[in-house]
Image 1: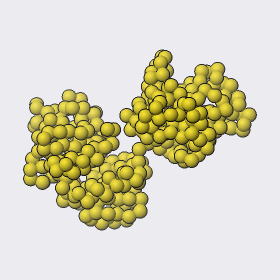
Image 2: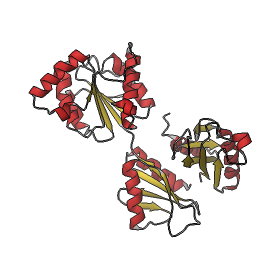
Image 3: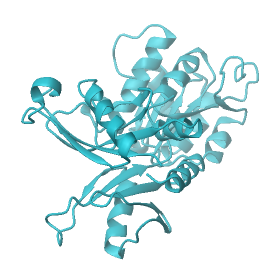
Image 4: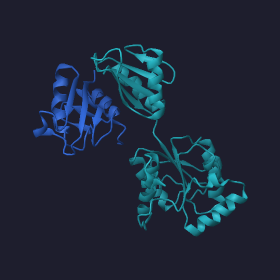
Length: 238
Length: 105
């Protein structure tokens, strides 16, 4: 791997730009394919570029063989997408366990809580913090299909507005802390605010897989397990 | 360090003047422990970051990576139960993996 290619790749990762590293396994030469533009040691035709960008969107690294060249080993495409994100509403005790667990799992974490005593750097070392009102904080972070959102405040005036925004976003996971009874009254409020059954059905609540979690760390583990199951398309995530 | 920072580690070793090779899983068959795209960086002192299996073949990959660091030539490695090396470094899970090893300039 040429140093210039590696440096350019790391720069794109630092800037959170999706990029594919394409290696010609016959020659060892490499090029970088961006959403717009190609940089490197060889050019690529339009059809191949479309296939490579398709892999970027699907987050799917793999071999691409050239039907014209049956003997050749083809191209290997390694996808480098920006990290998946976990946005946590509520800088509570469970969030203190969930943030490091999520980071270890590969998520970029932001904790949103307007209550200054909760969202402190001391309680969340190294974690991005937002003291915005939860719905505004969430909107500013533009949740996309690579984002999971968890509500942990247990306080309807903080959770509900953020939850509505989350349910109307492309986030692949939306979870909310609360017992079955708490969730039932939450659903009543959301219906009164005009949300449809299809929208509220997206909420994972009570949040997390049912593993009998008791402590904040155990609850964080059950949440992260559920987020993982949903992301990987496993039925356990339902 | 998360699992996604292998190339960052490779660059940082290069910046320290170390020789570095990167191994990448490019294809898998059956139940292999790490998915396609998984990477491991190796330096000439035997330092490793990341993984290309559950620990079954890393030793052999480090060995081959040393050769790539020495001659600069990329190598294609295959591991699995049908491989002649299976007695030594076969995958206990019965899967097969193909690993591409390249030097970092």
